[in-house]
Length: 480
Image (cartoon, rainbow, N blue to C red):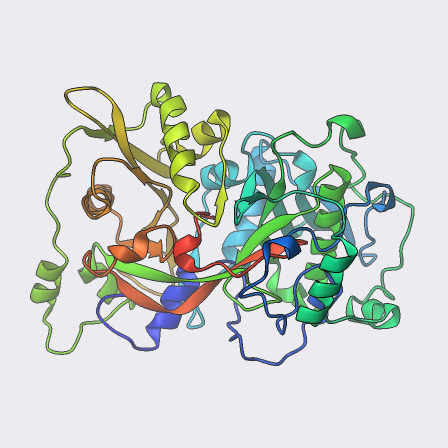
């Protein structure tokens, strides 16, 4: 963030990061008891130069062995799918996340996911209601935990991420010799996951027993993975170890639907990141950011000089720049998918998915295209989404409005000019700060656009998929 490298850097990173509050570094030797039982590479595994033959599923799919009934919860809790189309339930999820999801260590800022944002994030084409997994207190029906996921098609190092057969014997031997997967005995697994307190049962709990459709239809031909998000447990229940049970349960529900791979991000280091990225921050309203403690005046800088430093033109500079329209979606979807093929880790969007994720939604996502004034051809696209934070304990300001760089493509306009226009548009929409990861081609222009670097990382993870490490500039996937 421009204006300083003080202790507020960690705050900025928490706000720009995701759902896990306590920051760890990659050289910590702490054992991850739960993740050591899961099909993910161990932190000690060397995946920097993994050969193509070794890339693929860690565990082959075994649909017949997928548990049919939900995992048990302690007696006082029950599973309950969250229906975001019901206003009351959407409000309950909003309140759970607002009070318990992400806030900085100094108790100054807290993410404020709006209900329209949650519906956008959790209800794309092909979403399944049973993948919005809630936990309620049986007696009061209070929502106290949640995890959700959405379907996607993802490619990694040119290979479609999807279930597959186990590697050949020779490939497996090579994998065993080049990695050192940690293992946990059945007894250790039970103790680590506190399953002695929640023994398996054949009795369905709450809404969780709602099955997928007939097996032949359960997984769309396009769905290859799920993107997992919004893992949240009420602060007062963190000692109940509900998070591992939530992960196991959503894994079970996704497996029942024929999907065995997932991707997710976290601000902490778990076994094992496929990519590590950093957030950068560009001041749009430096006076406000300084007043609320988000940033500070740099040495030998006055407020007037700081405001002048981050000043932007009043209007975009690219001719033909306008909001995305529905009639643009087919062409832009094709151009975006072509652009994303340049990256080692990136999605492929259907037209319906493109329409859902990129069509402008007030207060949620903003998308603009460049239409050539002469030929009327669409040549470029930029987008950013809105994720504000509540400002705690400040009498003057209540909300910090943050824009996050989303997907784009360029065929004519330079990325520097395109993202300059993104900053101008965000400023005109009254955003206070513009955040961007050093993924895609962002790093090539961040310095010139006066972005300041954060002090933490955002890790990308793949579940049940072994692959070579991906550099930030090779990541074309943006997770909310």
